Amino acid sequence: MCSKRLLGLLLGLGLFASAQVQAGVTAERTRVIFDAGQHEASLALVNQNSYPVIVQTWIDNGDLDAAPQTAQAPIMPLPPVFRLNPGQQRSLRLLHTGEKLPTDRESLYWLNLYEIPPQSNEPLAEGQSRLTVTLRTQMKVIYRPRALMKEAEEAPGKLVFRRAGQAVQVENPTAYFITLAGAEVRQGNSGSPLPADLLPPFSQRVLEPKQALPAGAGEVRYLWIDDGGNSQQGEAELR
Image (cartoon, rainbow, N blue to C red; front, side):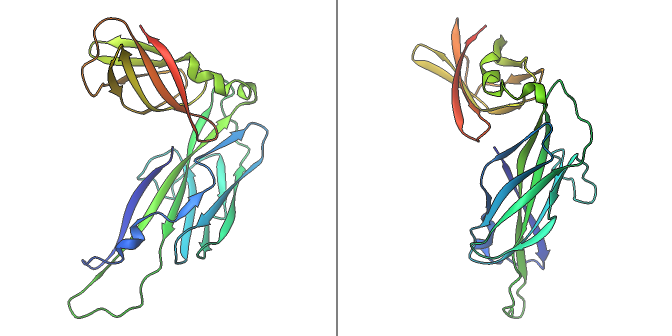
């Protein structure tokens, strides 16, 4: 999954161009898998807006407060700044800098697409002001070591779910980042939804249910996101 964050460039204190709030620059997929030994990957972007935009790109560790000037990552997007006309498509190049990364687990970085719409040239009436809204989209960039290239689709089936009081502890014993799109504890006809979460390699998370867990034995049905960005189903015993 990718996340979106609205950022305002305030030019005065008014409201302007509410139609510009929606994201218009979209990518061909929601994540990039960068295999070890691969020097370059590409990602197609298209501007679905009815107006041109300036797109700024950078890769960081996912901090929403990070800026292009301070971002540090072993993968670099090119070009860093470019213009996209309405309906135009462009291929973004992602280059590996050669920095050595862990070989026993995946590494996760985030591609930022910062979309800046044009400013209106229409004159403002006396007392009016203008607000231009920009959009920042973040996408996962996962670096996968050579030894892990063949078993990624099997990793979600190895998740372990345990009761932790009135919560559920999920353990990821694998070397892969696993994105849970959602889950539910089931017992007969009753169910208790669990929140989505990102599970780093060899990690544990506590998921707080949205309602009381059913008593006794149960199972967890969950959705996870594959390399293509598609939802897949999984089931596990609740221990």
